[in-house]
Amino acid sequence: DARVTQTPRDKVTEMGQEVTMRCQPILGHNTVFWYRQTMMQGLELLAYFRNRAPLDDSGMPKDRFSAEMPDATLATLKIQPSEPRDSAVYFCASGPGTANTGELFFGEGSRLTVL
Amino acid sequence: RKEVEQDPGPFNVPEGATVAFNCTYSNSASQSFFWYRQDCRKEPKLLMSVYSSGNEDGRFTAQLNRASQYISLLIRDSKLSDSATYLCVVSTGGYNKLIFGAGTRLAVHP
Image 1 (cartoon, rainbow over the protein chains, first blue to last red):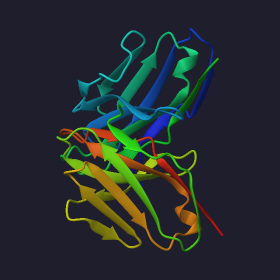
Image 2 (cartoon, chains in turn green, yellow):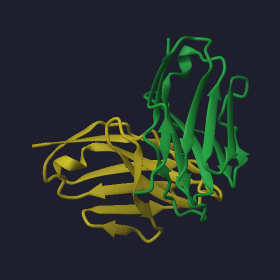
Image 3 (cartoon, rainbow over the protein chains, first blue to last red):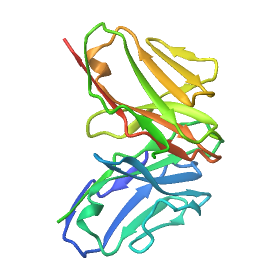
Image 4 (cartoon, rainbow over the protein chains, first blue to last red):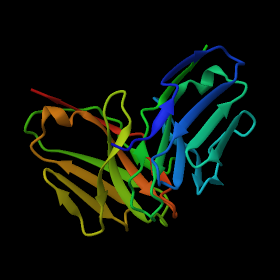
């Protein structure tokens, strides 16, 4: 079964440390999304890419977050420096890019705890 | 105001019950609508699309009211396995940019 793969699954770090989360989208999918989920806010869209180009990162705090797609098989989300309020589950999702089919395939998420 | 609003619940219902969830969205230019399901500590997965004329998938019925900017999901004959969080999702623009509601939690008990 093709699936979106995310690493790490769980990360505990201390405030001020750099955190990098990685995502391998499904082969052939040309849209990639990063979402953050917390109990209070639900799923928030942080950034998304089409054909590796960033289309929208307006949901992302620019001072500390950055998202990139160095190649078609890897998307990264970096937080530097991390803060306790960044604690959340970060989901990567990919889609085939056909307009409005609605189906995004999510990875299992990276659970981040910043102490 | 959030773009997609849902009652967080929880909805606690017995097996066999019929339960309905509602959702409102703020962007009148929204083009496509969906329901996703998320099990505890799992990733969201597409449950069904929502079409203007309404649509059914087995025990699940979805409705859309564009004039009122309102989406609903009806589950008939609830099963224990339906216990999950149901996320209302709206697409505003191309490239599948999906905006998620915070979800409505459903607990079905014996």
